[in-house]
Structures are given as C-alpha cells and as structure tokens.
Length: 121
Image (cartoon, rainbow, N blue to C red):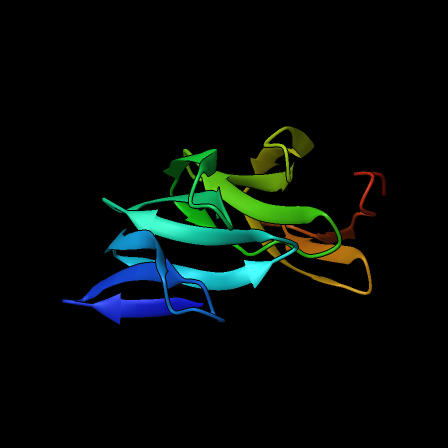
C-alpha cells in the first residue's frame, strides 16, 4: 500500500502496516502486475513488492504495466518495455499513448499508425 510522509512516497504492507519501502520517492504508483512505477530525482523506474529496484530509474517518463508492457521515454524517444526491463517495442517513436485493447496508438509528425503488443503494424 502506497503512503506519503514528508512529501515522499513509500510502501507499507496493507495487512500489518509495516513499512516495506521507506518514503524516499518523489512519487509512486500502486502496484500493477506486481510492479510499481516510482520517481526519484526526476527519473522513473520500477520496484517490486519487496522494494527492490527491478528496472533502474533512468527514464524521463513512464507508465504503469498493462498486459505485460509499460511505455517509457528515454532521450525524448518512446517505446515499450517488458517487466524484466527488456525492450519490447524500440524506443524510436516521438510520442506514444497508452494501450487500448492491446493496441498502443502512437503519433508521428505526419501520420498515425497502430502497433500490436509484438511491435508489428
């Protein structure tokens, strides 16, 4: 369970109230697919329910996991990663939006394309 103390985000066991992750993050999401998105020093990454960093805090922007994938932005390019941190859809796109029925919609300067979760048009 996410909580805030002194303007920092941490996580507690929802049954016992025991602090699992000290409030060290600027922000954090709830857990989606057993992973939470966290923000520290303007970088985003992911932790597991034990507080271990499972995907380093290196991203400029990121979303929570949905259907095994999360949108991330690095060096102003967006793509999708898997829960193990490997790239599922290369970080080549200027802007990506959230998955809708397993199809992320991304916009390019000239046209709009649809990608499947496998990265194919």
